[in-house]
Image (spheres, rainbow, N blue to C red):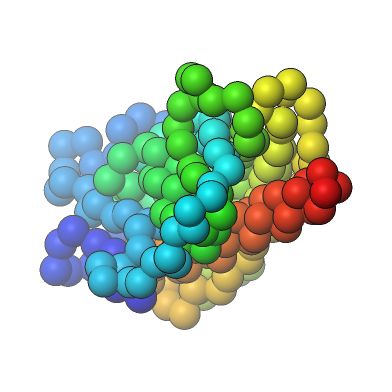
Length: 217
């Protein structure tokens, strides 16, 4: 997995500090620019699955995150309190990076499905809605010194594209422990967790598609 930071120096998270309160102001105000991180992008040169000649459409609706995690700040939680990691941000809003990860996962894992961001003109296939309720670094120790566990949790709903009838809904949970308590390692663990989470969603949709096709024959 590639290192996911924009600069060459990543300070320990204990030195970066935490900004308390989910409604806090901008990070890094009057100080050093924030380190920028990304998640969910396949490494360059990673092979993709050969696309089949016959594909069914999956229209990805706008990915929604809970209000406290829908921006570009990185949330850390401990014992009911929530704070943003100071001096570290995603390169853009987290839902946008997550949606891109979903698209890439479909392209690499589901050759029989064509992922699209638009439902216009599509009469057959599926519509996929994703809502993420947790996207956070969970600390188990009061001092927030030990490496956190990255938790991603949410719901996916698959609809019939033509009739908007619910085909299935499922709750997904992914938890991956960071190996170090520093911003770069935490961002890399978010990337790893996102890759696993979206792969589970894609495999679920693929299995549902196979079941739907079986029922039609």
